Length: 81
Image (cartoon, rainbow, N blue to C red; front, side, top):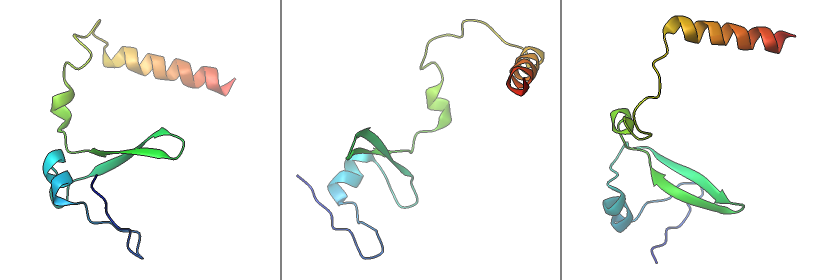
């Protein structure tokens, strides 16, 4: 098990083995994802947005900007009631 020590400023140094495995470098972003009360998962947030393309399969239907505007207007009108 790899460990790190929290500094007085709330900072930790990520051990080299972990940085190498996660492929994170200086300036990269990481996320702390709560997986249960009192338990978090440390995740590298370095993926490019284009890597998400196709993650959920092909699009079911194309939506126009006009359709999106109408849906937003309808939801806003319903919320105002």
